[in-house]
Amino acid sequence: QVQLVESGGGSVQPGGSLRLSCVASGRIRSINVMGWYRQAPGEQRELVANINSRAQINYADSVKGRFTISRDNAKNTVSLQMNMLKPEDTAVYYCNVAITDFAYRTGNYWGRGTQVTVSS
Image (cartoon, rainbow, N blue to C red; front, side):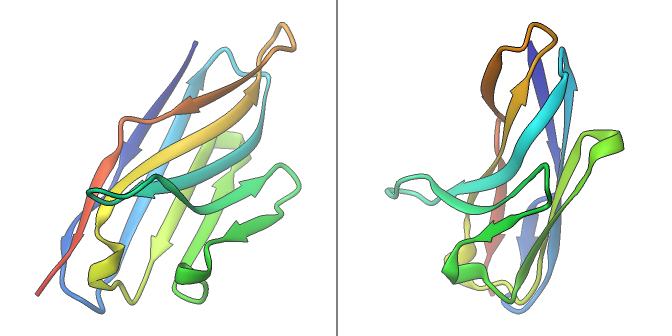
């Protein structure tokens, strides 16, 4: 079993910054991909950014140049620095990891989500 603990989030004015972090723990042999998704009310969950074990990164077009994803392999942590936030960034943000466990089984896990609200 894998547990994901998210931190960060909150409310901020347009143009402000927030930082999200997520720590993975449990029966993890390796973490293949770590990332963040978000879901706004009435919308589908969408990828914000992810980073694989070779540090290859994908960003949604809507956040390029404003958000930065990073990972610390030693601490099984992924972070998302969000700058120049806009009201349309308001959503619940979910941490997601794809792992291989000690039995060489792969699995995909989600955090519980953290609310980000951008409003004046």
